[in-house]
Image (cartoon, rainbow, N blue to C red; front, top):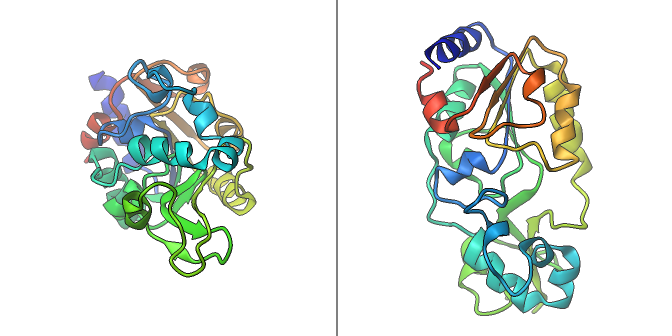
Length: 240
């Protein structure tokens, strides 16, 4: 492990064109449950499977039940950035990290200080009335009883998150692919690389150093120069 950390330090020290691609494992260290691990949402018992609840169809047909789950399990408004978020924000300030591409919807990268964050699946921090498009913050949604309603027109408020059956934002995809394809170093952290189309974006990487940091193995381990099976926060915190 020490040799891998030393090699990672050398790679980071020698670049000013790093892109980070992260998944749920980046936020689990801030106390936010992921979907697929043994303690994840997919392995908890609900009346409906979580992937059904966070689908577009379920949101439309059973909006109140959607919000019960969403407010309880996906709106961790007390969560704070961890060592991984803080290190990436530091690297951006130092001119090393060009962009963070994330599958997470919690806004913790921005809270840590990262400015160029590409949110593939949207954010719980942005919410809009489906009728008049008025903006509402996460606290308004969380504190609303039942289904959050617009205080201007009475319309239903929808979180700006990508639900199952919904497409990703084309502009976010385009920018993410551009940064990944132009990067010298791509660090992939805290993701099983099981969710497409997001996972397929790493196929656009043409740079020198592909690094995978995840607690468990991924289908892309054999493509990486470095594979570190450990906590993303603890690993990044060791890099000066």
